[in-house]
Amino acid sequence: MSSEAGSAIDTLWPKRMRGLDYDSYNNHNNYVAGYTSQRRGGRSTRYYDFKVQTTSITKLCNTKDIPTINGMYPRPVVYAQEDDKVIVRVTNESPYNITIHWQRLSCWSDGPSYITQCPIQTGQNITYVFTLVQQKGTFSWHAHVSWLQATVYGAIVVYPKKGVSYPFKFPYEEHIIILDIYKIDVVPGKTYLLRLINAALNQEHFFAIANHRLTIVEVDAEYTKPLTTVRVMLRPGQTLNVLVTADKPIARYSMAIGPYQSAKNVSFQNITSIAYFQYFGATANDLSLPAALPRFDDNLAAKTVMDRLRSLNPVTVPKEIDRNLFVTIGLNLYKPNTSILEAYYKNINGYFTEDFPGVPLKFYDFVNGAPNNPPNDTNSLNGTRTYVLAYGSRVQLILQDTSTVSKENHPIHLHGYSFYVVGYGAGNYDPDTTNFNLVDPPYMNTIGVPVGGWAVIRFVADNPGAWFMHCHLEIHLSWGLSVVFIVKSGEGPLERHPHPPADLPRC
Image (cartoon, rainbow, N blue to C red; front, side, top):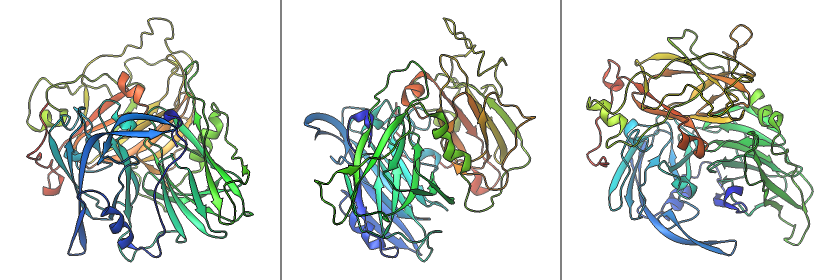
């Protein structure tokens, strides 16, 4: 459902799951080239063979050659269970350099180019290996080099362990919606689980179904307290699971996405994409009831859901803080001949420094007094500057939007971790007036720092590696809105950096 691509909407292999019917998703995976599965000691190992290929695709009467996985567009879905081991062999048969990013996993399989690996060049291959320890829910995978994420992306669906149920009523049917579908046929009275993924490059999106309410039960692959709303807003790279009950009169209801654009004087495609939530008994010739979407610049609608989002149960949030960072802007990274992670692991000098500032070089009225006169001197520094964290550090990160060029909602994504969003508000961050939620804050990996506002996140640095934090608007990433955290090894055998794979690509 990406209005950037000018498409409508597109469902990936809708599944009717009666109980946790793992054979259903195994049967689907058998359609993916090279998929096999082995089960040992209650844990499966799932193998995938991804070939990056250039494929001619026709949509809306236009044909274009695009990079794909196994010639498929839509893209293959990776299915697994909690604690499964997943092995994906990626062979690059395209003319483009490629990497694949997998969420919250091993550092060598994280995928961002020049951060944890050099790109896979034409004719090369790499085997990504990761274990889904205590992970379940909906994730996304995507290319993480240049702008190839535009067509190289897909879903990861991780089911609970066998015998473990969802913390909500089991749905009649579930669908993966990579904000790109045409129609979902529904049975009156049944409840559906929609796994929503925003794979857009540069656009946040509102999503709604005409006359139906959406109940959020999971965000970024973490369960939440059920939250019922008439619309949701998804940031690029974000996943969100909602329950929808077909409890309205038999008809054809519009499912729609529309852009959320908070920056001023910025051109974008103000296009609404339409699909259909169609009851059995309705016909394609029936008039569809329209879905109500907010205006593209409705900042209040964008933050309403976030204000009420909570973790399913009380959680253990770090109370004492070892590292308190205040970040307003990122930095520019150059393209070296080795990755930051490899340079750090092998103790190779000259590829990065460890002096990323923990606070802004200059404090001012960030929201109302930013330097907006040419040449927009923001006192930013060029360089590959990283911030180093000791293993086990309890980190608080204050993310502050500024009005430099324009105030804007920034979807900030942290690799390698999820984090607790303990605070969120408008204006300049003020510790004297801020009240944190330290009981049941949402646990996320992408947070929209609100337009002209701030967000505060907390996490424990217990995953050694080099971890990228960046704005998930691809254009902003290209401009350098990013930073790398290096998390050192701990003392225990399971707290140390793993060895690099033998097939790690060379730059």
